[in-house]
Length: 165
Image (cartoon, rainbow, N blue to C red):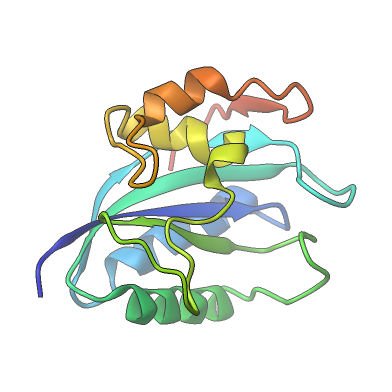
């Protein structure tokens, strides 16, 4: 199997948010056949959905020998090991790991790739554009830098968090 360029969104808005993000990035790098290549700056962002604490978000660029379904399974295990509790949809999360892009693959079955709402969310677009501004969406062919400039929704607050991962 070929090495794939993968982008994973990480987020937390419960407890020690930055600690959860750091542990998740470390755990991603400990998956056999996966290497953490780059990590974006951390952003503090307003939640999507119900009223709750602001999130800390980042995007991690990986190189993976695993397939998408296997990697997603490992990501769900990491969420469980870090104590994620399933609450209501879009509710508070100790840790949230989302598979955003997996190379140039497009999946439509049990796993939607690219992630269906990535370009509507500043908490994905901004950090992704920080580490891969020229990476192109496999559907539109437009760059992450383009989407960062285009996404101006004032209802989504986002600011650079002062502490790095």
